[in-house]
Length: 495
Image 1 (cartoon, one colour):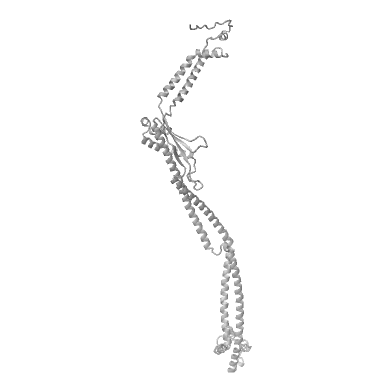
Image 2 (cartoon, helix red, strand yellow):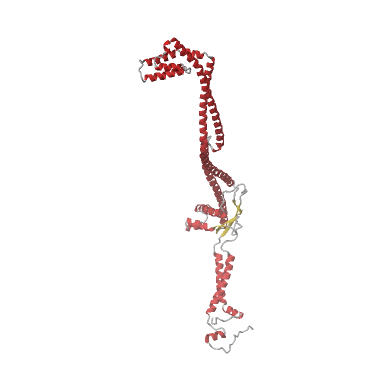
């Protein structure tokens, strides 16, 4: 084309079309012919699809909550990997005798990969439509495509049930083991709390008020016992004084009788005898008092003299005379009924004092025991708080695991009875009537547009490469000369 800036009219476009018509027709015819030949000779492949519905759980989740919470997409990926594994596909290829021609030239791995490429799992593209999916299989034989598509859908359904049941069983088993460990720990904690309470029974924090009341009662009881003991001791002293008063006249009479029988005793032979006579005549010496005084005097004399000394002999004689007159003394006193009554009262009072002293010691020990319990209560309270806190946390963990284990067991039963979420075929694969590939209408339509576009492009290129003159403007631009006149084309009309 010489004049590139020329504005063409409609007639000029028609002129160019008439001039380059074969550049358009030939590519168009070639492209359409090639597409037709491909559509006729290309191998036919058929696609069979199965529509699978994701059926929701039949039991409301408010009553039984499923343990399988993964989405359909995640589960389909897992199931697809299992179904389209080499082992599964080889089994299907062997059972249905697929790819017999390809098996002669390809290895088993390549045949499996070829089948894997012919399997399509498609989810709905819209987010609000995820309750179903399709499983498709492409094959050169429509019957094979239908059979394999239905077989794959059955495998997907079986694998889904298997995976859900395995997940539910695994969850139940895990929770059961955790529950057993938690139960053992809870039993151990219960035993620790029981042993602690048994070991410190009586000194537990909840027994503090009781211990305080018992301590108060013990202190009051100890006070009453002390008062009774003092009264008994006073009574004993009073009885002893009365007995001494009754013994005193008898002792005096015995001393006077001894003096009449032994005139020599009126004149003491020594200073010690004078002292004893003075002591015997003072009117206050009893038998026991005189005996004790003579024994002390004898011991004092033996520290100074030998047994042959007259003073030692005299004191020994006095002790002998006192012992000889003891029976007379005792008989005289014991014959007195008043003396016997006082003696019995003294014995009874002594026994009562002994009993009160023992009881006072026992009550004091009890008071000390309860005081120690009360003093140890804060420490016991801290220990019990720590034990109970750990026990409570262990118990709460056990109860939580128990509830989860029961729910997991219900979910497992739900899956075993096939009441959970399931895959259900609502549109099984049917025998395809038309091939999936090649798509002849689509190929022919594309070939028409491609042939026309190719012819127009070739005509445009040829027109751009043309350097011939087609009008006066081309001459003026090419030669630089002014055209004075043009001779129009003369066409003969048919007569």
